[in-house]
Amino acid sequence: MRILKGILKEQLESAGRLKKGYEQSILNLHCGALVSKRINNRVYYYNELRDKNRISFEYLGKLDPDRIKAFNQDKHRKNEYKRMIKELNLQIKFLKKVLSLKEIKNV
Amino acid sequence: MFDTILKRLDKLGTLNDIVLVGSWAAFLYKYYFPKSVYSFIPRTTDIDLLIPTPYKNKNKIDLPEEFKDLNFIVQFSGQKGYIRLGHPELSIDFLVPEMGKGSDEPYTISNLHINAQPIRYVNLLLQNVISVDYNGIAVKVPHPSVFALQKLLILRKRQDEYKKLKDIETAKIVFNAIMSQDKDKSILKSEFDPLPNAWKKDIIKQLHLNLLDNIANFLRNPPQQAE
Image: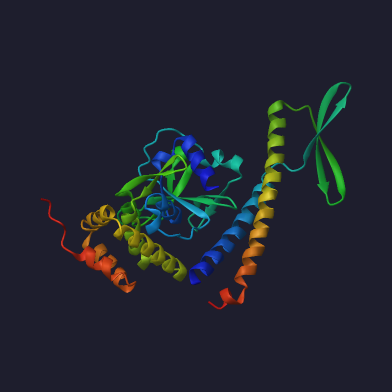
């Protein structure tokens, strides 16, 4: 039981550190969402930014395909990292619950 | 995730230059020993990859970048900033043998774009490396004999009590499996005999302390003479 408790405790610390890591990684990605608008048959891009309930658009103009790809990759990555954080939150909740059990706590 | 990591390393052509150690190596011994003699060993959510130094593979691979699409992120662990590829299911740590008087400074492996943590006594794990077939992938792991001997050697250095207990339990399971196989038993003896006397003394002491007297007595027998 002492081995199990040790593994769970270490796992909890590691999940906390990893969660912080994903949060930091999200901050390093592009913020906002890429929005395109067609005006006079030309495509212009805007960065949609949300601040609580307020939405604002930052004009980016015409973008080359590489920049669009990078934007989309970041958007995809951000969603994936958010999914990882959700997973880690579940792990942390579960580990805390198990570690608080009387049988484990008193070892 | 374990399979995914191995497949990715295999695809990148680096798996052959890496030795899997730690609890996941102990897990793979179930593919080495007959089922009847080897029981379950708890695994952790980190996988330890031991890289023999100097790293000889000339191919330049950006490992952190190659694992990005699997949602691994780069983390820096410890005060020294050893690189770890983190993932909620399984994280990857990189280790190298600490040689001589040693230094705990991160060891840079530029061809892989990583650094690794130098660890004492892991050079013993590289003395006898075997290949285990895991779902069609050849994975290099230390022979169980050097794995179990190393587990006892590091006990003195362990700070965490639970890690000590885990090492003892793991060593017991592996030693018992070895002792049931004549071939592995003689490999154990041949790996133990040439070790430095201080190490041998330490191992024998730990075996007695942890009620593995039969193994201590077996190892203390004089080396077998070649005919």
